[in-house]
Amino acid sequence: MTGLGNLIYRNCKLFFKDKAMFFTSLVTPMILLVLYATFLGKVYRDSFASALPESMEVSQKLINGTAGGELLSSLLAVSCVTVSVCCNALMVQDKVTGARRDLTMTPVRRSTLALSYYFATLISTAIICLLALGAGLLYLGKVGWYLSAGDIFLLVSDVLLLVLFGTALSSVLNFFLSSQGQISAVGTIISAGYGFICGAYMPISQFGSGLQKIISFLPGTYGTSLLRNHALRGVYEAMETEHFPAEAIESIKDSIDCNLYFFGTKVSIPAMYGILCGAIGVLIAVYVLLNLLHKSRK
Image (cartoon, rainbow, N blue to C red; front, top):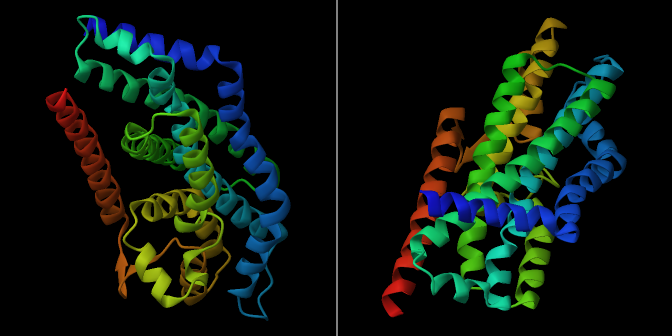
């Protein structure tokens, strides 16, 4: 464990010492928050308003709180994965610089080295994403606060769970990369495409039925929905207090992906947790298997 602890410390130190990499990872969620609030805020508010009966009057605070919760969940859903890809780039950089070859020539086991990259990425990504959560909570406090202490605890839990997922996914992807150009290409593809396929940029309910069925097989979709449910629980409670019809609340939940359906069957929140945890377990198993097979070939 001493060797593993030293390697984790070494990897974390190198990541935070690389000002360009750290600054990019830290600023990306903040830029997304500004862009979401500027460009997607109106889309989310209009989507919320369209799900309500025309005769119903709704306070601006409630509208802003709904849109803000959706913005926060979208930001975190994307950041937990894209930031982990950036943080995990050290695994590939060590291949490029030859540092990994030097490390494998020491008594350090390859399995220990592989674990050190995983845990270092997990720690670095969690720090950045929790800072992003803090910035998002400040934004919600300004536009419309409906969160309880329990909601915040669940949001932190969701973030850590998605960080585990993002770290496992990036570890599998980066295992096959061996150049700086490949890192940039994969990072660009994930940054541009992941937000769409997980329902962060646009609610899945607005996609075609065929695409909805395809996306329902992706675990990241359920991570986004968990964040949505916990970021907006207080909003729905406020709607009930203001005597919103139950049908209207369910319609809103459907329109912004708090309710997800797998081939017509509604997916419960415990099932979402099960799917996400199962995906994390599978990805970690694949990462371990890849390292074992690589060791055997060596």
